[in-house]
Length: 261
Image (cartoon, rainbow, N blue to C red; front, side, top):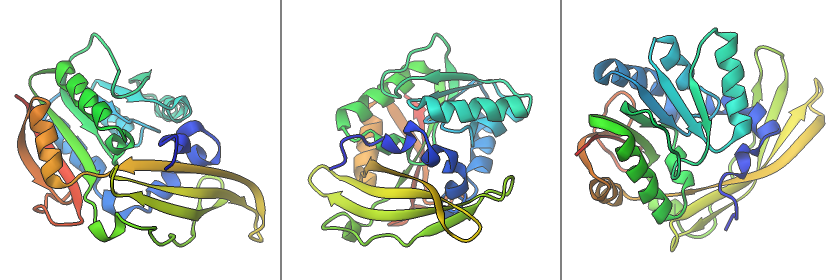
């Protein structure tokens, strides 16, 4: 078991390259457009939990929405702040946990994108987070929650290592490689995780800098997620398996739209 499920976000090369590697995740294709559509339909203000580098928050701010972003990682929020400043945008950024955040603001829409909710590996923290969200939504406010739907054959034993991945920063030409050092799955705790090394490469493929880090996520079946939302005071309005609004399928995304009950 990885002791710190959020170690990946502490800083260094992992944070520096986060957006580059996230762009390779096909399961998230179209998510920003989906959240923009939800914001235009539901209205603002908008709360984003696990806002990270501002990948979703900045487009919302650019579209004219009042946005508050919450993240436990100051290193990630520093990137988000620079992104906003470079684009001449403004948003409120809070460095705190999603299960204990507090603000006087109230929101019409809350977003937890990109599986960020699953870094809460204790079910009590998950419940606390959803309670906080509900308390900060205006009557009729909506929560959008994105999780991965677990394939059960990957939730037992020691999952296969992932192949190495490389990316190039188009702004600088810098090359980076992510090397999977090992993965684990704990079916009792419903937690899976990965240890990895992020490497900066020179023009010949030599390693100029590296960082070893890890992450862990708690997986939930669709039925468990539905119960958790209902117990936390939400009425489920829709669920999809991708950001094109395909119906739920095993192993797709768990994309939930739930209204404050």
